[in-house]
Length: 348
Ligand SMILES: C[S@@+](CC[C@H](N)C(=O)[O-])C[C@H]1O[C@@H](n2cnc3c(N)ncnc32)[C@H](O)[C@@H]1O
Image 1 (tube, helix red, strand yellow):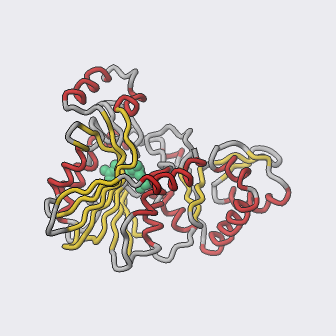
Image 2: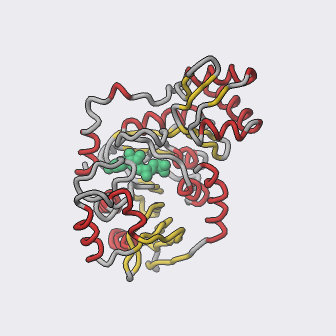
Image 3: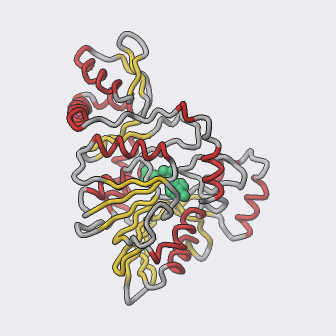
């Protein structure tokens, strides 16, 4: 297991009493809640957004009471007073599904990752085919796997964070879901049988650049250059893909004058693949380092990155395909980026 992840998990020992992921609904209850949510979201999108996206308490009207009693029984909301409810989760409406994640106020390292632009881009653009056995590493809320399951033959997901798996189980049960997702707790490929291979491996890994010794969210702690978890994955990925297997990631990568470091690492790991790169955004390094500016470790950390020529970070969707003509193809799909922002910006 990765050192940072082990330290962050250790911090949670003894805090398990705060474990309050939503309760997994039985089939009929799941369908009733999903239908109730769908109708309410269509009828009252501002009220829906107030409680489930912006995390504000809601004065529940008479016609909403039955739905809120169901939502409370699953642990999605909590009754504060006569008709006032507060959220216990964020609940993102996306293409007929509702995906629960943690509130942003949960500061423990096991906070379950919210939805934003990246998952919208991923589920709209990933290349998942009906004959695929798919593996998603870093499953989180399960959002990507749930949409992959609409297409693929089978989907398996792995996450190191038990709380993320509990949310993923809830989200899968809420449905609608045509195929079961096999879920495993553990680091990357560790919990999987050594012989298993996949046609598609999906990953939205932890990607933030974090000074050593800092405690940070499991969902975002990518180590000093943001690539720790991805590098561990790349060491094993050649043995985990079928001969025609494809690797697909959405993530930020440190960037030098010679290009994103992640693209070099992928080319080294999969020399017989063509690497298709969509550049979705680019930002100055310092904008990403902001949360750590006050850390005593910051000056030396910043200097080490500068010494490697890292001054920017790029937001990338990367898709590798086995090919007789390996190499890199770079594009910037502006219209699609705008479409995904239009869908996800209202969630911020
Ligand atoms: C950026 S979040 C992405 C979650 C989800 N796939 C999504 O797109 O919303 C990264 C996830 O990786 C998980 N994670 C971190 N280190 C891991 C590791 N070594 N093995 C498996 N999962 C890990 C975190 O718990 C978190 O759920």
